Each structure stands twice: as C-alpha cells, then as structure tokens.
Figure 1: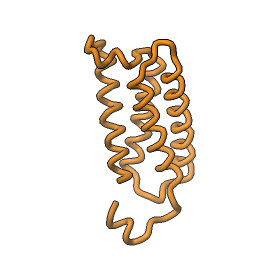
Figure 2 (figure 1 turned 120 degrees about the vertical axis):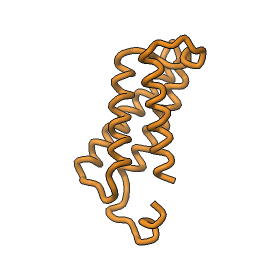
Figure 3 (figure 1 turned 180 degrees about the vertical axis):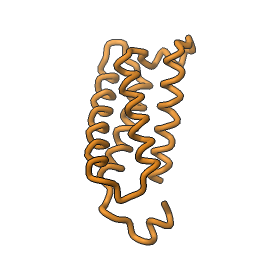
Length: 120
C-alpha cells in the first residue's frame, strides 16, 4: 500500500508539474498555482518521492531526515495553498497527500519483517 501512495503522488505531481509548466488553459488547472515557487516545490517533492521508490528499507538516516524535512515543506505548501486568496485547491490536496505519504515513508521501522518484505 505504501508504494501505491508513493506512485500515485509521483504520477499526479509529475502531471501537474508538466501541465502547469506549459500554461494550458484547461479549467482543471484553474485550481492550481503556476507560481515559480510552487513549481520548485513540486519538482523537489517529485525527486524525494522518486528516491523513496528507488531505495529499499531500511534507508539511511540522512535520506529519512531529508525526506521528513521535505514532508514538512510539502505540508506547509499545502496549508499555504489552502489558505491563499486565489485558493488553488488541487495544489492543497496533492501537497497534503504527498506530505502524508513522505511522512509515513520517513518514519519507517528500522527493518521489515520477512512477511512485510514479501508484500513490499
């Protein structure tokens, strides 16, 4: 289940990153922000989610700490998007989902049991 959430966050953030970069006038993108700061946060979040998908538990403490820091930044971006005057609601939902997913991934146990390794 953890990989599903990581993959879902990765796909949606990449789709949003590409579609807002090319300035499409799709009505769905009216619920997002195309600010440069939000684009940077999206790109860095995509890098961290990709790193979580490519590495296997137990991960290095440095990567876990950096991932938790990115989860806090993503959570702050979600809160900012939710309370902004323009109200980019889709950004708030996606950043919130990415923050929760990265937090769960960063707070993993030291090692997985044999059964969990088989399920992962």
